[in-house]
Image (tube, rainbow, N blue to C red; front, top):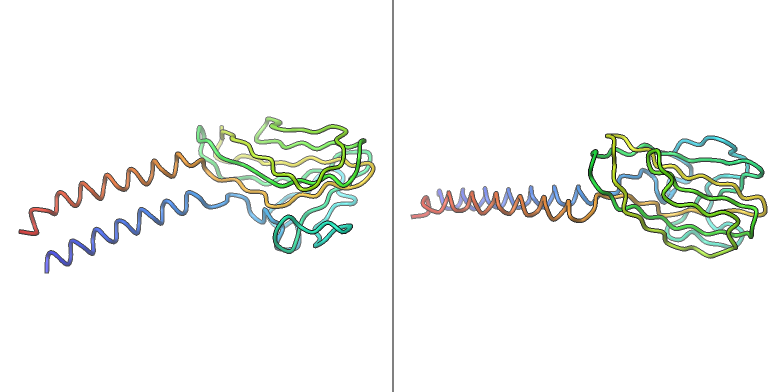
Length: 192
């Protein structure tokens, strides 16, 4: 009976460790693919004219799924912002897919917290392109902000993802594995 109980305990710990590992990989961004068909999870500010969420837009399908966001504020900048729950000092992987349907007379930037981590000015047209960054949080709530101005056409945005870097996942899994090994060793004398 004790042997069966100890195996169940070890199995429970393994499942707990795997569930912790899975939660660490979860996307921190709400509605990053705009699959709710709107800006749920995001706060719009600045110039919001000529912005929205759509399926195919002027013949360009979403990068994935059924929806994508489009941005074409004319003459001044528009923004979408989302506050992410972060841990100060922890690194995060962050990526998104961006397309530019028009030529120059445009601006695009990504702000993480109080820092601009990427920007384009007077960019030529380009199809959906993936942009990836490694960023570090300095506060428990980090604003992720996209900034747009497009005087001649539209920017398209899709599949915004932010997750803790993989070393965090490996650390948790390693820590859980050590705990399971220690528990197993402690339970070993009970088997006899």
